[in-house]
Image 1 (cartoon, one colour):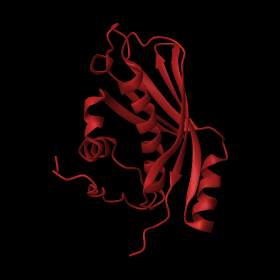
Image 2 (cartoon, rainbow, N blue to C red; image 1 turned 90 degrees about the vertical axis):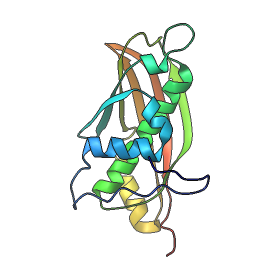
Image 3 (cartoon, rainbow, N blue to C red; image 1 turned 45 degrees about the vertical axis):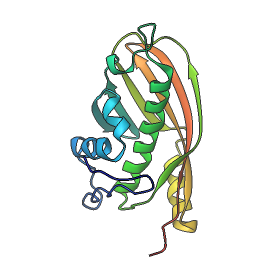
Length: 171
């Protein structure tokens, strides 16, 4: 783990070869260093299939006083998964930019009572194309994503978040 102070950016992970995906294990290791809280969230696995990014998570590090999933942890996970979706999409395009969450809403539908999976997809099937066009035209963009938390076959949480891709910083 790299020691750094407040306001000090963490070193970026080198971009993958053009058109290639990041290695999931290497990306998660970097994420745990870059965002220390990520290492405490119980993320066991990450994989991408088409437009979907999925994490498998352990409940134990995210328990509340009732023995179910703590809403604060679950919300942090949905926000971070969306941030990862945008960051990994950009990296596949060979783009290195800062990504921030601009707006976030959650609906808690059922208690989380065991290990679970969290999925993230664009809210609109044109989301990627719209983001790419915005980045090409103005150097910044925005995309809406949906994250769903599933405990077995039960949908326990649904989040809808907007992420902004910031313009390139002048050299």
